[in-house]
Amino acid sequence: MIHLNFLRENPDYVIERLKIKNFDAYEYVQHILSYDKQRRKFQKQLDDNFAEQNKIAKEIGKLYKEGKKSEAETLKEKASQLKEEAKKIEENFTLNEKATTETLILLPNIPHESVPQGKSAEDNEIVFTEGDTTISPNLLPHWDLCEKLSLIDFEIGAKLTGSGFPVYIGKMAKLQRAIINFFLDNALTEGYIEVQTPYVVNEESAYATGQLPDKDSQMYHVEKDNLFLIPTAEVPVTNIYRNNILKAEELPIKHCAYSACFRREAGSYGKDVRGLNRLHQFDKVEIVQITKPEDSYDTLEEMKTYVTSLLRKLELPFRILRLCGGDISFTSALTFDFEVFSKGQQRWLEVSSVSNFENFQANRMKLRYKDNNGKTHLLHTLNGSALALPRIIAALLENNQTTEGKIHIPKSLQPYTGFDYI
Image (tube, rainbow, N blue to C red; front, side, top):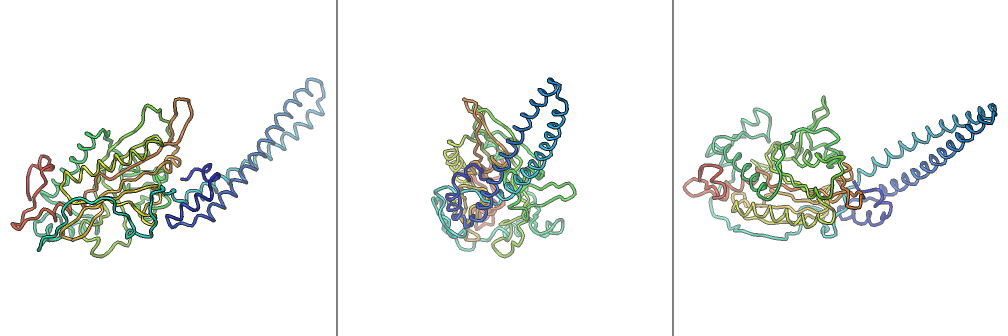
């Protein structure tokens, strides 16, 4: 959530920057500024009211001491009236604060100055490409390979649950487990502290990281308990520090976490979402960092470098894109997507997003730190997929298939799988 003080001092800047996200913020900002003006009016009325109550209280005490009971009783009636007036003002103040917040949360995060203009993924900026994308003849897409080698059964998954919930079999199940451990071990080596968090969160947690109200239609909701299945481990991991004031020496916070992820992906059909390309349930290892504001963009570069190292170890051709305003998420200030080239499908597949949210999430969850002078400041939060499994597996299968019908396993994974081919 954009901080109210910043919006109050920079309304025109907020309106202009949000145009990069193709968001017309003018009416929202005007409403917020109007609410803010009313809030300050209510605050002055309350301050004046309390000051008058204190003045009268002192006069009442003085009158009783002087034996002027009748005059004191008259002032007591006036004090009671002031208390009733204060109660009404406080009610209006509370309603005003609610209206302000309800409007503020509809504003997306302000994009970083480097975010390019654009309306869709086609306008994203390619900033780096590495690896061989030469296509060999007769390469099969992963869904055909999985059927041929009995690795994944999409039909049984649909029978058990529905489409988008595959069943992994034999060596494929072990490969899934191997990749998860490979990603976690690499994260631990990089200084991340592993946490294991719930797969369901409450409404406060989903709100704090920006999934609500923006992505409520994409989340699985357990209505009876008002709990949400997580779309990513970012949600519970970041919320560990909700309503916390950290010490400067505790920073940066670095966590990694494995979780299953659940996304409804409503309206996802066609060949681009076939097989593992888009699932309702999938596995992912997430990295999360919480930093001081002045360190967050160096941290973002560090996280980009780390994800790059994983893709190199997996020997996959990849590219990095800076997301344009039309493709960047509601909560992000700057996002870099990683895509791997899948030779069987002859297309790029997104496998990671690394984002800096600046203080947008921290403001929602009241996540702050105290500096050496005792002053508190909002922190910056960042997260990245390191990595999501389905499309990584799709690319590994397609890019490493041989004419003999085998699929080679990259050397970095062989200690985890216990086999060098499928």
